Each structure stands twice: as structure tokens, then as C-alpha cells.
Image (cartoon, rainbow, N blue to C red; front, side, top):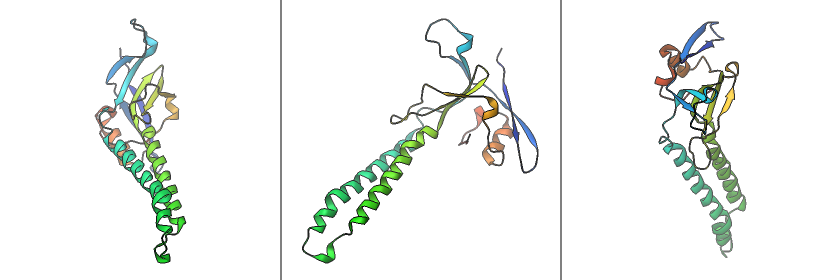
Length: 179
């Protein structure tokens, strides 16, 4: 029999507790053998559609192009312009270096973003398993992180959490949820 996980969300401002039932979508085994091992079964609560990674890939692609542009600007374009005999055309080198460092900083953020996107949530051995996406391919990672139920919480003041609590089903929710 499949058991459903029930979570309690506590609203610290109103002092109210609300119960939410997380319903599974399917059972999957992580066992590499063909025999069914009950310890390796995961009850899936949520699975992100693998093809919905267009936005993070676009952010990383544009950010990488932006970084390459600033590197070209600082390494090639700016020195070429500064070799001009016309002083009023010269570019302060600080501009190019600030642009390179800012672009690389944004590119690091774009590279780290897929690691914060949840691809799957499941229950295994009485723990909540959370899977993210891998970098640079931005595919669903095969190795999740297991947490005790007491370690994972949702912010009860957000509209997203209230929608899940009111529906009582994480499987039907569409949107972004921070854990």
C-alpha cells in the first residue's frame, strides 16, 4: 500500500497550523538489478517536465555571449582604440575591466541557477529526497539529497505555499516553490 506524506505548515504571524497531504505520482526503483527491492522504491511527489529548461538554457547562453563580448572588448577592441593618435578617442581601461568582471559575475549566477531548480521530489526510506538539475547539460540529476521531514519547510506566507495547502496536492501545482 502507498502511504501519503502529510506535512504541517506553521504560519508564524497568525499562529495557525495547516495540514497538507502530498500525494505520490508513481513508484520508481533505483535498484540496478531486475528484482524489486522495497528499500529502493521512491514515491514521487513531483517531477518537472525535462523539456522545460529553455529559460535557464537561454539565460546561460545569453550570459556566456555577454561575457565573451566583454572579454573581446577589454582584450582586443579597447587596446586597438587606445593605440589611436587621437587622444579624445581613447577609452579608460577601467571600463573594460569592470565590464568583464560584471559579465563574469552574472555568468556565474546563470551557471549556478539550474542547481537551485528542483527536478524531482520523492519519499524514500522515510526521508524527503530532493533532486536538482546538473550543470552544464541542465538535465535532471540522478543523485538526490535526502532530508528528514523536519529539515524541509516552505514559507507559509507566500501565495505559492497557500495554493498548495488549499489544494492539498503538490502534484497538481504549477509554478515555482522555494524549499
